[in-house]
Length: 405
Image (tube, rainbow, N blue to C red; front, side, top):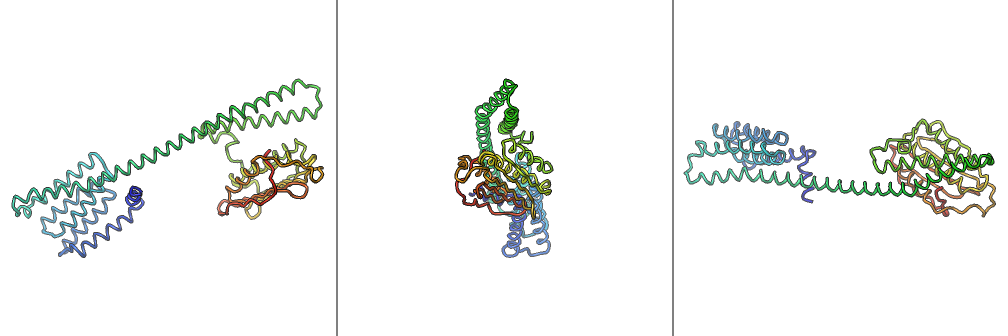
């Protein structure tokens, strides 16, 4: 806690506050404790204060100049030596805090030489010779303590910074290892089986040359869908292994706003290929959505249509509506349950599709609802505009939800 407090006080962003406090302390000392007697004394003290404040940016120059003011004060006979020495201690601290090596040695050497000249001036030589060692000892304290304190604080800050960097490096390494493990599992398990499916469907298309055209159409659609899934999986594995390649390919880049209506129509076409009748109503403003909401709308539509195709009754009819009203995106996918009699509709699955869709909407401060509607199922989502903060969505209590396709 002390380290964090010290970093905050000595941080450059708090420089104005620190300088203001130093100015108040210096002026209070000059007014109450060591009040200058003459105008020349005031001029020398204020010049020293100006140099002390400049030491926050130019510590070496201020450290070299302030002892010179002490020598000048000896020549004109001022009584502001104590305030000037206090200001010199502050600049020495700043020098040790912000510099190192030759800069600190040069500043300390210059200050030491001028302070010795000040101590051995004609005024100082009037004291007995026995007082010379104590005087030099006091000068060494005046020089050494601020330098040691500044160097200690600088080393403490550097150690804290290095500790944070090591912690960040370890965290990054752990995340990289986790991403690599996930990528390996995706490649070894999912991608392997999907590629096997693509290969077998391709073989089936060639060994059944005289098959029913409807079967050929199903095989073609299955082959295309599996090939698209495999390509997406490969891109996902690539990004997990190397996040720097996140912009390669449409899977990892945001949806193109202008192409969003076409992408929604393609999602509906894939659902129609499964036997689901899909009617689309897409507003013209959808093409001008921001990239984040465009991608979210596309993923919600794909997941919702996949659920309807999988869980609705035979020959079901679904309607997808996407519109923008008052800069709020509204997506609705509703199906009629098909020809199934009440009570015979397929039971909902146990996947995580609905939870994932609610999370997508929640990340944007939107609202998500899903549940039975008459004989069918209704999915509804609202996505507010980005500048408007919205509370996290509250999932509407519904009977057991359906899983992902």
